[in-house]
Image 1 (cartoon, rainbow, N blue to C red):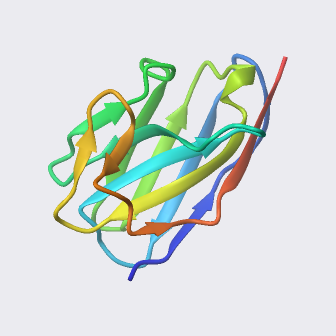
Image 2: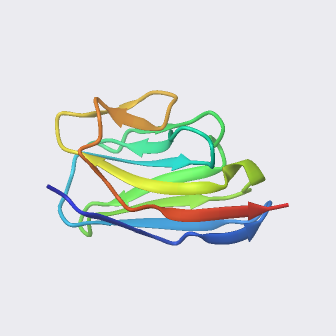
Length: 125
């Protein structure tokens, strides 16, 4: 089992930046950020695999960057040029090997083994 704790959410104006962090209690092969807006289903945002392969949802590609520090078991999501539609609760997810990033979706598969509690991001116009 792995425990995940997110931090870094908050409120920002459109065009601004935020940096989310996720601390994992142990190392995992694949990690990802998902988000859920009010009234919508949870969706993949960005994911990173065992050899640092990455995947991004089309809506965030070029604006968000996912990275990991394997020595510290930390996952980071740098979010730039934020839009109102980026608002929502952002969840860190992790999956043990075997797993893979899913191209073009920001997800990991076949399915995350653990989820964080979420951190709220609010982008205002």
